[in-house]
Length: 218
Image 1 (cartoon, rainbow, N blue to C red):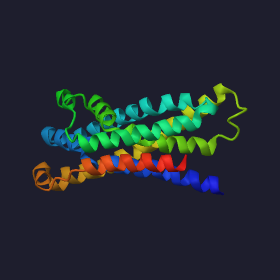
Image 2: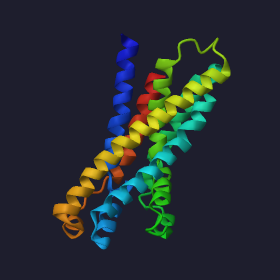
Image 3: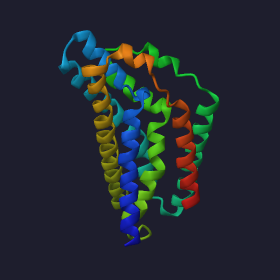
């Protein structure tokens, strides 16, 4: 029962983090609104959201899959978890000190939203935030890591990584899509610019908290 409760909480964290990423303007939903307003077409909104979702999904996979491949080293799982938690904390502290947005994102043309979304997610540590949650989920599904074949463990961990990436990206796209549609349909970017909300500090602090909680539970 404890394992089932823990797994449910961790999967809930995957979805909640996706909703959180989707609400954050830094993950790109204002770009979808801008594309729709410029083209005067609702279809452009959905196409842009789809491109942003694809880029975000690829970024999640690029971070999670290597950790999934490493986890077949059962003797090193604790060290891997500690290292991942320290990486998340370090990135959060760095983003607290350095508030500047990566300049290379401004050089990506608007027509390449998937690439922009991938780079933005990597630069902001969106995938890295998921790593401690993902490692926790792997612990709830590995029944006999010490005796299972390495190939079986790797396949199982990579499958979980894919599910985590898909669930997270789905929640992110839903939250970002709702915000984008509301702004496109009723608010408009001009009104949004007068009441812009910045989640940079909250984002950095959340990275530190996720890393800290992961260290506490190792």
